[in-house]
Length: 343
Ligand code: KG4
Ligand code: ZN
Image (cartoon, rainbow, N blue to C red; front, side, top):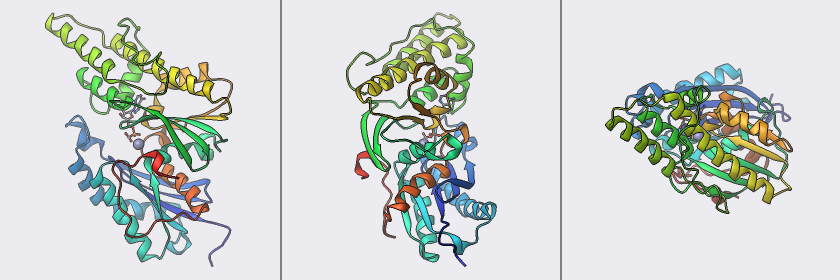
């Protein structure tokens, strides 16, 4: 018989290039977090090809659901709800996860929870594996391939974006300069490694660093980097990749740290800083945060919860589950879903 004190949420993530299914017990214990990555298929194109992503999700989704249920060891009748990423992301990719989640919810008569992907990245920090729970009010620096934003979280589920990038996301900038350096996609991790071996000799621009407010801009930095490399090529000069990586990463980190610190100064009531998203895997960023932000709790999820995964979606879904905030079976995907549209 179903133990009413236990709840299990099955969560599905398919917004970009990972098909993932997780099962979360009582909002705390991640029983499984199956991730099928498509990186090998997109690598040769230097980025994610939306049509290919959708096709892979379609192939993988039922296997991932089966594998997650199997690994969690939970019979279907024990599940309490199904959660799914409804945006932001690639529309075709999102629709695969949403269609699977809706069909699963309908077939097993379970409530359906719609989750904002970025709320998922943020709520990965609430899991015990990350060092959670988050103490509120919190500030979140969300840095991924598609997003760079600072979010004020007054309490669980109440998000207010206070600033974001005007142009490229920070992960996107890493991937674009990586391409110019001849690295394969995604190149954030490789640049991070090289950045630890070189010197900051190029003094790249730190855009908007002194301007008030919390807007970011990385396109000028990216262009400065690309121009430097192209000019050197024309003169047959050889630049040291390690110094390029160190100089690029130093500029990125200076900007991220400066904006985060000025938000913390403006909102002294903040109790936790959450740094999440794929770029939160960056070692240099982790080191600088540890050195420079010492007076409040800083949560950076472990590497396996930084990249896209359904575990983070299940954690955000748990807040909705407690609030009985469910969506209907005719719910749509929202490719440009904003933070401020969720309550
Ligand atoms: O959150 P994520 O897995 O997918 C999106 O929702 O975008 O983030 C992927 C991004 C890629 O741009 C990748 O290059 C970057 O995260 N990334 C890193 C590192 N590891 C992954 N960027 C900098 N340093 C890293 N160590
Ligand atoms: Zn993401």
